[in-house]
Length: 410
Ligand SMILES: [Ca+2]
Ligand SMILES: [Ca+2]
Ligand SMILES: [Ca+2]
Ligand SMILES: [Ca+2]
Image (cartoon, rainbow, N blue to C red; front, side):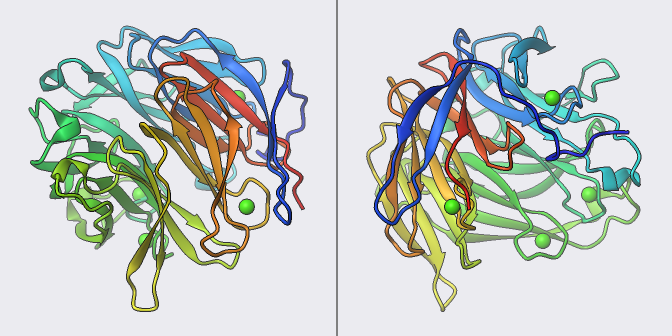
């Protein structure tokens, strides 16, 4: 019988380095200890956390935009394994579906489903074939579809039937030779891997789309989708039924898409909008939005809704050359979420923003000053002690690190 996640206990191995000990008056001191997962990964870009060997400990998939291999690192020794080989060109996104035991009526789960987005030419965008690669850990890895310029993906239960579908967000419309600066229509697409059928959620997004986030926005048991791009932050919700658990017809869904905020304003349309989107929760239970603005931009913004229903923008930092690593989680257990932002240029830097008062007093705390130029950061409890840790991967620094959360939690 499978051990229940979050109840495992084990000792982390490796040499820890105390990186920061911040203790502002009246503010809980955030403290992280860094552990190197890998330091020789050319093109290290993003991570995807998932328990790949089903031992209850979350492992780390590492995507490189310079490698034909996708590696995964086994927690807690960080022994490296090849997840997929001969990926040409590189892989830029991954989505993992770890089904809860409840979905299998208490039976042991069948392992994880993984989709890798590959075929992304960093230097020749017009050749972005967007191969969608499927692995269930048992059958051979297969390419089940092509979605040109596929860039972000996430599993989400869109129709509320208990099984997750795959949302794929291309960075731009097909054939665009400069997708990071596109001004044409960009699709948002739904799949049920490994079935090849393609379902367009919307073609209302104009220009580059760089951020994708999943949340059950209205608490109705169906996951909803947030996207970020030159056109701002959009919410996409499905209506209608597909009928039949895990096998319904996704083409029967109807979609409602609305813009939540325009994001950054600028005369240049390629400097507008938002590059990434996360949702967070205040300690009092109110929701906020956090964004990087614009695409590959340097601003960090927080939005809170007004009594009139308008998302009000507050820029909390503008110091980044290219902010890319991005995560939102409650690192000190006070019920309110903090924001993580990684500088992806030069020597980098990983920073935490904390708002202790529930107001506009976001303060910045350094987690890693110059040892991580984070292209991606993810928050998860990697050590099994109930505290949320942080995993980041960096391109210029060619590395991946675990930041073990040592913050005192109430
Ligand atoms: Ca594991
Ligand atoms: Ca579903
Ligand atoms: Ca919903
Ligand atoms: Ca907190």
